Length: 317
Image (cartoon, rainbow, N blue to C red; front, side, top):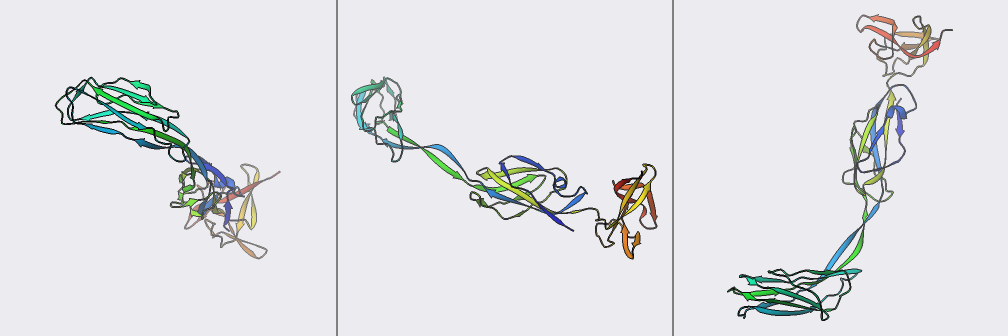
């Protein structure tokens, strides 16, 4: 008769490996075989936090088309407001020159509310001012000058002035696509589970009675509760009565099962005995079976040499 074992819930994380031995979980020490198996998950929702940034930008620029040997250009703007909903800010100024020729002796001067904050630099890209402080709404002046300019068709000065705000964003992660693999295989692909929500039962293949490794693969929350169940039966028939035979080599009585002749777990059912008018089959197996009694063998014209199967021993003293 088949029985079902259901494991307790176990909390696992992505990439965990758990080991389970079905033979040790059932109520018999007799060898068993697995008839079918299933796996189920229960969702665990987790949350994670990460910084999120938004930027507001003022971008003054100027085309310079009339120049002799050089130029000086002043740009004015202000730091923009902090993006709505954000709680601190980083203020930056950067200036650069766009030209299809070349410029020499470039100098950059940045002022905030009339105070010089940074100057110097050369080439087309100026120094970058960056400070995590409150300059929101402050006036900004950028002065860019050059000693000489070649015969380029135009020179354009651009100076982005930025206010960057930051806030913490919380993400909710649900258990998604839970699965097990390695010695076994079972999955709930396409399934997302809310916190404490249980999935359906899914087929679990590859489960054997010995030590089995489950590799847990979980997306989303990367954690879940899982359990499995399996239908099993003993590989040897249930004794209806027992036959005692003396084992002289070990000075014990070996107990041999007398089973229902229709029991499908019998290897051979042709050796019969009657007890009080009821016919039973004596459990006999091939001689290479681990429980075969080598001291008690029989010859069958079709199946050859077989042996009684020992279920237990009893002292002969």
